[in-house]
Image (cartoon, helix red, strand yellow):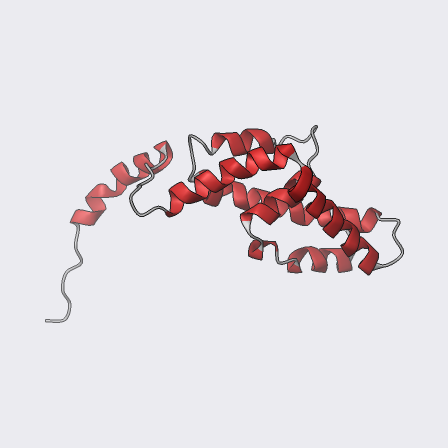
Length: 148
């Protein structure tokens, strides 16, 4: 990858995107033959809402970042302004007309509500439960007070 594309890839501020915009971009660049299955990921959020922030969001950011840079490298448009306008139109089209987007967005919004609700507590994942059980005795050990 030429240096300028690598720099661009490193500087794209995808982490600032809201989940709905990130989802639309992720759908825009979705490749049905890719190992990452966005539909499965989003539908898993019904049972595992913590995955949105724990793993899926970072995966989607990386996917979109990589896809944007590849699309820019392969574009036949003559200016970056045309490229930006094209992406804007395509994302707006998804956000306004895609039934798939509407369905997936509803699942993402539900996961967001669960994760941010004050009256819910997400159960730890099995690996986290194992680590907590392993490290529980550590909490009983206190450092000696060296101030005396």
